[in-house]
Image (cartoon, rainbow, N blue to C red; front, side, top):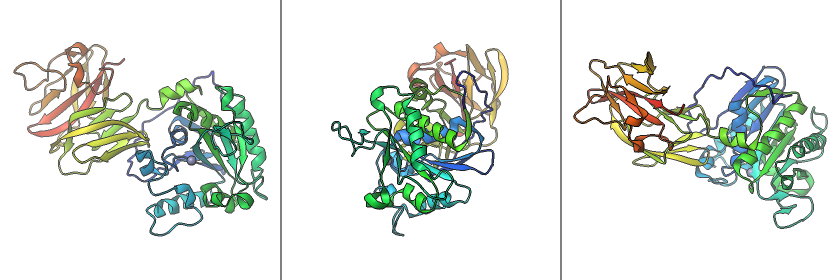
Length: 431
Ligand SMILES: [Zn+2]
């Protein structure tokens, strides 16, 4: 159990992921013999589901048992904010044509599901309205899918945790103990797939059931904002973990407000192996003169697996999940690889700053001059000056419209050698 009053200290190293339109798989835990697989993003317009899976993947520590997480199964549809750009991926588990563009994805996720180590599977969705077993109104009725946990049948005989209905009922009860609003009540929905619902036979969870593993779906409501959907998903997932004996830590209290803050916080885009860095959490709608490498496909990494960069022709679109956060307009350069850091005096103290770093500055900084290199501080100008090294610079010396963030706290410092780009770092006056 998590004690929410205790602050957990994690050794969070920032790991970067290369996102190449293929889904990510995170393996967390203690390598013991129980593993639950959590899948988000099977449909691209369900941010509650894929952001929740991403929370588990990047913000939870698993201390007992194992949790494998796929936060972004349908990457391309997530970027497009579409249920499925090649049709509904959650109807391709009974049969799929070899010619289907999603054939490889389905084959890969099936092999992960069938991995001997995987014991149970959770599939995360956002559904319309509010599921109720009797009709209350247009938004609350048996045809709606929001705010429920779903099973395909009551029991899966002869399998540990095969008492699907009992487990799901426990989860429903737990979620209902912690409602943000009483109208958000959770329910159990049994699709009785084998007897009543031919359509659901094609879905992921039934593929799991047919292979004798327990499966559950969780549906938050599309009527709710994303942070509330994530709130309910995480409440449900945590109760499933409790039931399965999986133990975890998180270093935040599970409240809708905290989730709203954490959704996009500390999200970085690292381009061409730290030559270029951006903090995406509060980034402006577009950035100009981004020094990109001429004639090379843009190579990027992020600490958030939901970050993607899409070539838009003369510019690049940057997404977190299905949110377009910024557009990058390039200026092309050859890259110089002779140095990967530069000396900077920060608030009076000299330190070596690596390209790709975000340097916190309280009052001022000064980039030490280096023979053969030119410093360009974007948003700072002094008449007749080409090299902006050896000048003490404070926040007030910047022209605000050159900041990369909406709060005018973060600015770019770029280093050049002749006409080649050597690298950049960011100065952050945000405290
Ligand atoms: Zn869905």
